[in-house]
Amino acid sequence: MNRMEPSGTVPTTHVRAGGQVATRRTLPEETPVAMVYDGTTHAVMMASPTDIEDFATGFSLTEGIVTGMDQLASCETVAHDRGIEARMWLTGPRAEALNARRRTLAGPVGCGLCGIDSLEQATRALPVLHRQGPALTAEEIASATDQLCGWQPLHDRTHGVHAAGFLLPGKGVILAREDVGRHNALDKLIGALARQGLDAELGAFALTSRVSVEMVQKCAMAGCTILIAASAPTLHALRLAEGAGITVAGFARGKEFDLFSHPERLEAEFRHVA
Image (tube, rainbow, N blue to C red; front, side, top):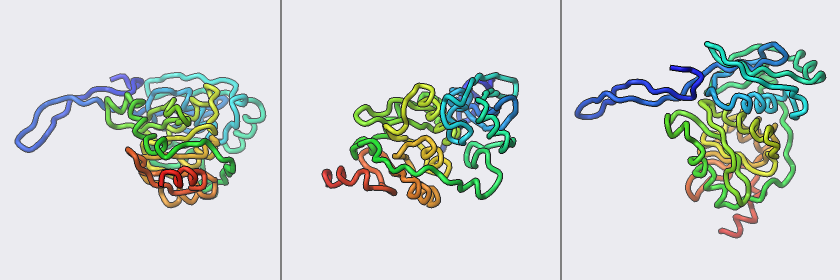
């Protein structure tokens, strides 16, 4: 199988009461992706081998390596037998800042925080989002994760990847990215928005996963005020969201959701539908 393809088909035996049958399954690929800045590897992430430039851009933004697209001079992807390199070159000041925190690490897809070497950095200060944010209806929030179903071709084939989507008021989900790692999917989405010149402040992020600490951190770094998820937030993620001014809606499916933080953004809507 070509590990640069997002999925591959393998033989398997399907077992159920009464017997077994030989069949085949399509599974998602998982490939090492090295984030290389100015010729030196900063991090190696296990990810789906798709939308790598979006991934590299979003990772650079959410990890604070750059604060804007003008600081990322160039980006190219190079495939090797053992994985993919995302080769990026930074403008002078950002390159100097990165040299002060240079390290190499391996990041798992399921959990972990990227590019840190101390407990203090794991709970680093986040931007506080005081602005009102987009005007979303309760119906738009409740249906956000259902809308993501139409943006998940890799999940349809494999049933083994996450998705992150960008929801705009009155337009629904207009952009999404998939990956075996939920935080990778969000990085890819944030990178795609930045590369297309779309402002994350104007919409909400919708996730097929739970809301963990790193998802709140990435949301805050992107300047997005509303985070909608199909599952629950962790307690620590919720504490971070409260402090960062992020509205978190969880268990969003069908016509329902739970509002966990900063309900003031949506209180008028709730009074209307009560």
